[in-house]
Length: 355
Image (cartoon, rainbow, N blue to C red; front, side, top):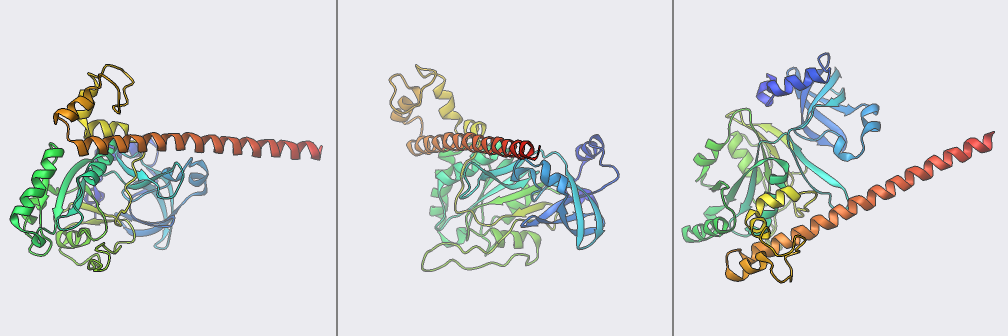
């Protein structure tokens, strides 16, 4: 296998030389298990961990390797290798870390396209699609909407869902398919290019693992049925993994996401809701919150039907979420700084007492 088969290119080679990593092996992180990594190189797959120096210099969990990263490493044997450095990322898909105050969780890095997968029969939700879209737009990743399980509804219902998406989301490709009959697979195969990296985003049970198995031509991921009692998908994929497909495309499979918390995604929000942003430029007040101000162009457009009401409400909800996350980050940094000062003073006091 060549590094090019994993998506390596001239830009990455240039970065390798710029960071003086010529003497180390280069590989791509294909899976992660609690700070242990599987790295694929030209020589094979190796289990690796990061150096103490990399751990010490990391300001947060985001500075650790993630699936999709290109890393420089020394190989000792198949069960033990050391990652010394991470090459600069050209894209990072992340979300607000679940249950962690003011922290971000990286989903995958160096992604070219994101497949936003929703099931037509039960999971379909345009609000959630707009969330995924915002994450993609802030991550500099091209989104492709995939409507799966169309075999479970009739043609008219499929048409209605597609029109619903198009009325809210413009200029994003939409592919409707069935993992059972493989209808629509001719379309999805045309968007998967050799050497490009794709990431699947979606809830549990929407058919991501079946899609991966069909695209790879192998049974790589275990699939499961929907729970009849809850009508929710079971978490079959338990970790992120990067897989090379039959046609040379590279796909990252993710565990299903019940929560899609928006982190620092202001730019992404502006791209996803560009119609709202355009109208906001005509508001009477520069600091208009678009809630109840007189002369608010956005509220006026909603009342006239120029902006979809549900889309407006979703935008406002995400904007509040981002503001809350940003204040959480500031608060966490202050706590970390205060803790650092306390440790520094404690060490000073110990020194004084010794003398």
